[in-house]
Length: 604
Image (cartoon, rainbow, N blue to C red; front, side):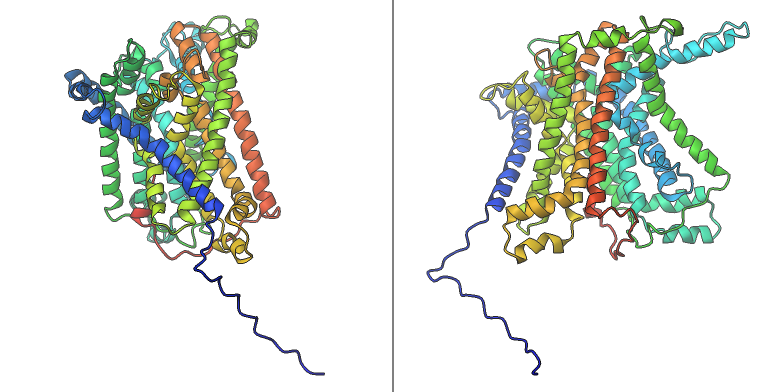
């Protein structure tokens, strides 16, 4: 019996004569149209506001008013006060986030599952709810902590006044730090996970203690991550509105974000020139932070991705392990547990008082919320707008990630750069740009939910792109190219192969976007109103009118809704991830990368 022979496959059929060209793939055309639409949505408002500032619009006289407001003594004084608040708060937040990330990622002081959720748990609470929670805790006369302090000493017959006063510069500074820590932590924790432990192990072998190793070896090696975290906390800190309006107003601390919102909402017609002038100062501060970040990452220190990162032995802290865990728990109490407890207690009181009437608590304020049409509309709009923005943002971001990282076109870099612009511009400045571009003719979107969705999607689009890109690059190129080998169209390959594999990362990004949108007050303060209310807008309105127990009840309900929706989304992501990996929970050892992270690859 003769052995079988292998035959050379027949050559492929030649292309048809007449110079016939391959028809363009419909998905690629759609993808580039989506990229162009996203870039236009971002660039058009920014271009509109730039024309106003440079005097190229229909009202050229506004440019001189804008520059006059930006250079006025009052504006510069407010800028100085803002810098003295935000810069120290950002540095302290960066230090706290660094310690938390180091404890959770590099030491034996992790507290189980709490290590992963504790630093970012405050992001599930709307910033305005957290700030109001601390008002209920530390107001000078009716604060619950002051009441507990006075009641404790009253047991011994001593009459003392509570020592806490949130309506001071120090109180405002404290809450600012709590607001900024989670954003710095996200960047720094990723840096710690990617850091090669060889240098740290060498320092320990040389006799350096854990804290000395952290100070002299670990942190200097995290240049890109520290620089990125610095830029993030400065951008968010300078544009933060909810905390200064709740605490800073009564503390008599002037902040640029409050002045901008008041210029647009406290006068009719809105003082657009003043708002734009102050917005330029915000942009200047973020630009300075960006230059500092570039200088930091180019100074020589950088994080190296090493193959031993996930398999290295954690640093043993010995007796300091309990101190590190106590630090983590203390942060959790200050940032999450205590404010939520204060909101719940005040929401059950008939009137806000430091002496809690435990036997006379009531649910009437919760019942009253759902009898109020504006409140129910606000809750519904917050959930619907959050779901819409998160869904639209992640769908668009998935397509943009596919086109920018799955193509070799020269336009890929342009699209990627444009989609990162909103991350470098303060949120209030971007919101002003959308007002300038879409409120008047020909669009006339002022006071509509459409404008809210459009603005939120653009403002938070960089976060969506970062999550979608991470999910895309985690799908190996072999799987991405498998469809093309078998002649599957680009669109079908995207739907049937890429999206299912990217779904866990996309779902996590969806949850993050939903939290940002549903709990936002900054954009809502300028774009929401009685015709399109959202929860943050109504919470501020109740706070300004002094109806504190209903306000606390609304903050609790908003936090509960956000937590439920995000928990469902993250649960689906976890289920999808286990389904994709075949139910295996064993940690796989990653391949050993050989290249260091370039400073040009670090983006925010």
